[in-house]
Length: 209
Length: 209
DNA sequence: GTCTATAGTGGGATAGAC
DNA sequence: GTCTATCCCACTATAGAC
Image (cartoon, rainbow over all chains, first blue to last red; front, side):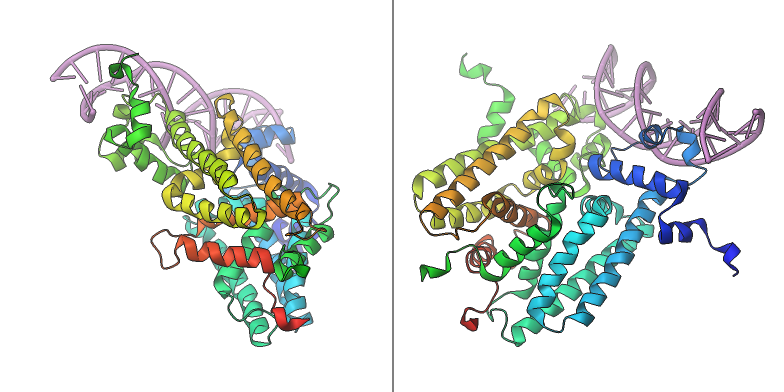
């Protein structure tokens, strides 16, 4: 249990440095843009400037690559969510902050978020990816708890179907990874603020009634 | 050009009857639930109770199957959208009706809608599926036109970013195909009404300010 | 319209040299 | 840590009998 025995994987998680992390970044981009099944190990190797066989010095399999990419993202996001709940007892600001942090995640883990969206259903059929369903369920518990708290406190409409509202927000926020460009003119903060505004007050002109 | 020469495909489009349509329904369900690439022609044949070679008596290729499934849905939805615009000059009711009709589409073409969502990006790389991008662009024009009209007429907030609002609505509505169950307790109409309410007036308690 | 049989291709993964 | 060479398998698609 000395420092010497720290696995290469743990080291990668901390610093994101080294060849292993480079290869994961390359693989992640391909998995996200072309899909996990459509991406071949030969393509990953080509993009890295090596031959496909050499990849197996670093990873057991193609599945191991996507596994590590997803775990890194999910570990991070779980921690962030817990922190938001601790720091924001008020439901309305908590929801707004969860949305902002979701866009920050797309900024930091754009490929992992896309892979999580696109491939969870396929991957979840394998035992080693059971944790994907568990993570999704945990996210749902976090968001719906905040929505229900806000409803009790009178911040959100009493006639709201909480589960439906959760799906509504989740689908809108997380799906934007398909078009959201972290390097584009719309910053994560701008999009997040617009989305918070629509969620809370709708698209109608307030003077209307 | 006599009736005798009507292609089997044209006939299928009209009535949805015959062996060809049965096979397409089976393939569509598999493509939607497991993904296009993850579904093998052998699985389709198994589900149909025949051998994989026999499928090629009906279809050129796996791609031809998904092509026909998608075209049927897109042709239908295009016609519906045009009709909504003609029947509803008022922007607010037009948006509400577009949303309702989207849920009806998920009711009628659940598999085609899912395939369109999940596989467009992959399929669009092939020339024969160029029409998928064109259809997506046409949907965008339809929805943003209504949003802009509503903004000019004072129904929607002037500070709304129309393109962002469109993506917001599109992502929310069409992504719900992943969890929406046409035979479940939530009917298309109930979900559509809740969504229209959130879009227009938000989740906040109105008495608040 | 379906079956038998199989061609042809490209995929993930491995063993051992360097 | 990468390369050479290659195995083995599953897949799409085809040809021709029934």
